[in-house]
Image (cartoon, rainbow, N blue to C red; front, side, top):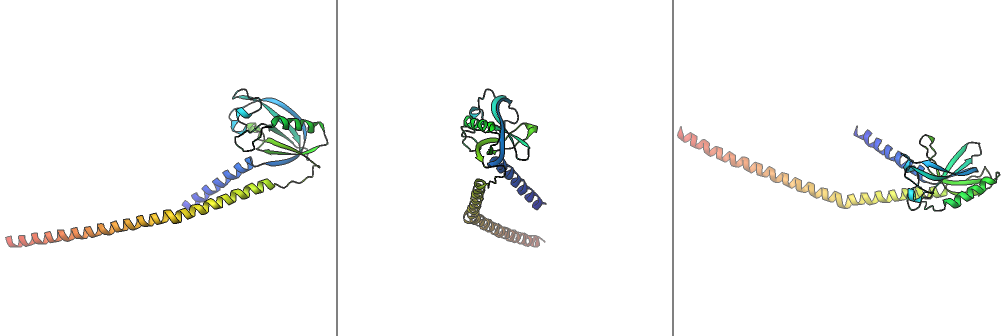
Length: 223
């Protein structure tokens, strides 16, 4: 039972980490930009999927915000809408401050109907809760068949795996050098205490036995 619980917790942690990385790490889409616009967007329970209010585009209140959007079309004809918000110094650490410049680049691309671009973004598009991926960069490409390898993601994931490996090694060394000897000494101390308690019990039983024998001799004399 405990083994199943441990494996369930491990799978849950891996799932949470995987979703976190999938949302945060940059992704690139090959698309054609077809429209750009601003829209006052209500922000409610989905606030965590939008930029911080003080780094947003024209933030006015905590419930609605003037946000830039970019409409695009994939080579297969399906569509995608990106938001275009500054991230500032907050998470995720893209340090994006140029949303107005990016909007101008997207507008220029939209006017050239033959231009294909790679939109670098993070986040998800989930209509049911009205969230959009945030575009952070637009780069012209040769055509819809352009293939892009996620080198940056590979480097980041490799760094994270190396960091996890090093932290695990440090933790195991800490356990081996500090915790295990302490527990061993504590165990020895407890063992010594147990031995001493057992010796005291034996002495007490011996003392009580001698008293009992002495009392028996007095009983015998009385008879």
